[in-house]
Length: 180
Image (tube, rainbow, N blue to C red; front, top):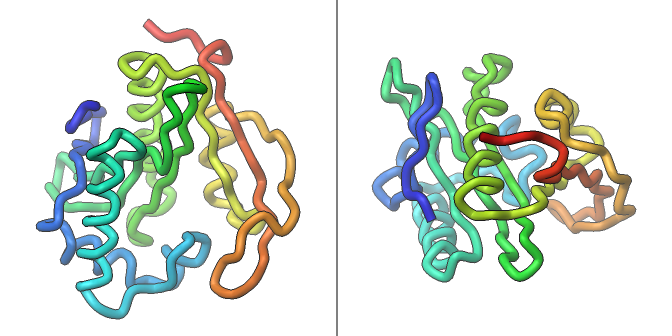
């Protein structure tokens, strides 16, 4: 699995425990974590524990998370990656989060395009999935911009912050796009 990816404006690097302070600052924002399966962090130890969990999953190629670094400022602006990878069925689920100050600037689609290229190129996957709460309009717009297909709503699919929530599922197939 590639440990680094580059786009026009971003350096995506595998997440490390040393990134915990920067990610803690992002994950303390209630607007950022509103639709994530975590509550707003209140202690940097939570960020370290999350990174350690993600690292364990990446050791067995079950998942990988990258930090997104702005190439102009070298600031960590968020994360993106594969929440789960199923090589047997050639599919993966993506996830992403961006610091609120960087919302609406095109960083999420740019980072996800790098993941798409990795998935359909090097990893030889056939399908990428994204699960999004219906109220997460910003994330839905990102997926629409990237030509993901809305497949339906999974009713009360997950328990998030104590409540059962519906989840919209979106997909992108290798055959939906042509890659060089």
